[in-house]
Length: 59
Image 1: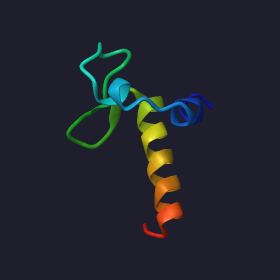
Image 2 (image 1 turned 30 degrees about the horizontal axis):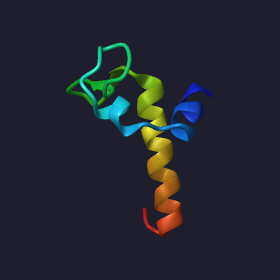
Image 3 (image 1 turned 45 degrees about the vertical axis):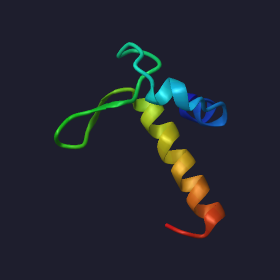
Image 4 (image 1 turned 90 degrees about the vertical axis):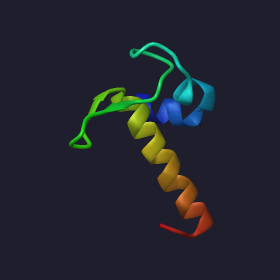
């Protein structure tokens, strides 16, 4: 639910900015590829990627 809200109102500066760890920054991922901070932001980015890939006809 929160990821869909983020995806629907995406602000690239908030996702790629130098905000605090808890908000307005990129998700934090460990060396195993696990999201340890920013799960909803990561899910929102995945949702945007899937949606844009479908629109462009690519995977």
